[in-house]
Length: 203
Image 1 (cartoon, rainbow, N blue to C red):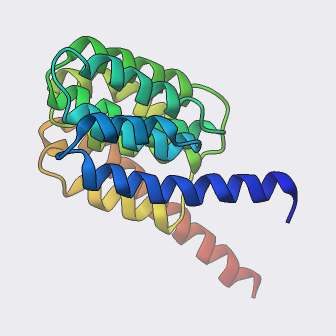
Image 2: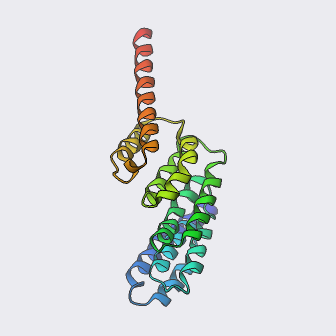
Image 3: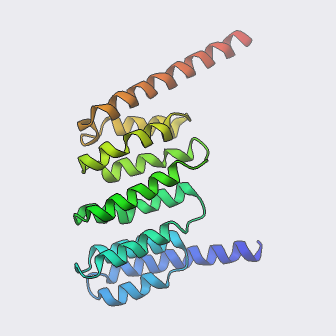
């Protein structure tokens, strides 16, 4: 294992341990939990820990800590991870009715999803939908990005995601998502059938 790989593994181990300590202490001593969260080196776990602290914070500090959490998410090494973990501070912002922060976080997630990445990785857009589904305005504003991000890619993970989303009562409230997901589901099924027929003909 290289020195870089060993350092990354140490950061992950520290992140798992300290994130757990933050969860255990945040309700009892939020100041200590905040200091622990700030000390995490791995951006993924630091984002999660800071989000949890923010969710327990006063109105005076929640915005600052949420921004720190989101900034940490943007330090992850690829767009998929940035968007996926950024859903933590986004969820807390929505929960606490911080609409300006929620809009800002969502806009930056959209920017990440609009960058070049492989089709399967772009399905992290589904995590965003699950996070914002309680906010009709955010769900509406994200629709075009979701379609662009998930218009390609197939496989059991994609099929499972589509199935779960179609069954979600909050997502069902926006018929555009349901219609699009049904179309994607049908397109994937047709592709599988055609591919199976081609293999059958070849044999």
